[in-house]
Length: 292
Length: 292
Image 1 (spheres, helix red, strand yellow):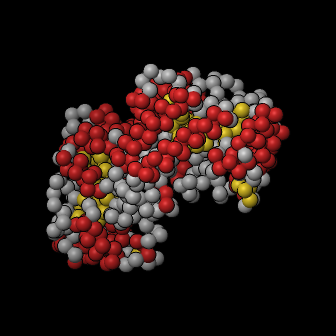
Image 2: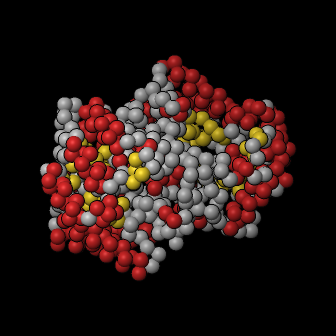
Image 3: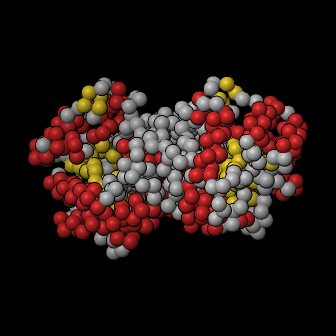
């Protein structure tokens, strides 16, 4: 297991972590500069932030700082109320793959979607089995294009409390079953983004991480689970402030062959988004060394 | 599959559903009367309510109304910070078994506990594997006594969002694995309480319900999953108001051999606990017929 205590060379920042600071949206350019100033070598930006900043400008800024991506957020959201909606989703994923390629991302992270309309408060249908079939078909279609351009897709299993609204792939086992079905040759073009927040509770986690192996583990995300958790979406904790056994899980992940970045992704309306980006980044570095 | 549209003979009310009405705690005696007046044949009461009302009085009142229990809430909470805490937990479960026997319950429901102290905001340790081992050992100890007195234990897998604070058994598969380990003969003395709220998202639900079969399916609880869900504990929905495929799941459960009550358990600080018990019960009956 790599020693993180003396450097943060393997720290990446998911830009959602510091995009909303003290009530204001922080431009991606500034986030990149803040990371670069602290010797952080990688980020994972969101599509809307990249669009606002201009993708070529973002690529140039990253190159100038010698920085890379640990992933690109995000594709997915396949299930749709009708065929027209599905077509729109597939085209959008194609564009996301192109953007990820332009930014030379190691993978496009897929938050696959849940029951269509549920995120807006009214599900178009309740059949989660149908949503899961649409997700599988959607990933299969995206994978075809991803193979053409050489952009790995990373399915992110989301916590079961997000099953209705954001992702109906909810365990690592389920994600790997889809990987095995669509990419039996383990080509490296389809795998998973493993976020401890979503999977820490899973009694089969150790077993399934070992099953995933190097070919499937494309990204690794950290934060912490707070007790109590006051909101289903945006009450994530800083590493070390919750109950997740971060070192144990990283041990499993590295034993399975993962040697990439440890990406911090904290959604926190109630705490971290109220602080300055500088403060949050400094504590991310400290906790990356002491708690991850 | 039984036809629920024309009667509510298989409706049971978990008394938490109407115990907090319009800000006030409702005595169990009144809850039982409210149910009896509506031809509801079964309830599942909580230990503290029974203690407040007096267990012999509760038993007599139920007999007078010709009512039965669909389960008794609850045993469990095994993991402890130290050996003394574990001893207290085991003794408390012994008492819960005795109470369930006095009330002639079909099973004692086990909410097994999570990381000790987490419910109070500070976990004594973070090793969820250790908590799971303590749970297994605790159930094994309780089962020995439960066999003596003839009181089946029903492990309730809780939603993964409750893993830290309330139960580190989080899938039906995990619960059944423990049942098979501790009761390989399928004696009927160890099984599960299946609450749709906790398991509806599980991609292996249909498969594991079939695996459970008559010998393991000891209780069946219903409510609904709202979008959005505004609180991790007490924002459950009335059947039909959310996204759970209630009829499909009951179909699986009955195909596996379950022929008991459908117990309504709704924790709802934000809606139902603000209404009168009478209104809630009337709507439970209506939705039991139309949505369950």
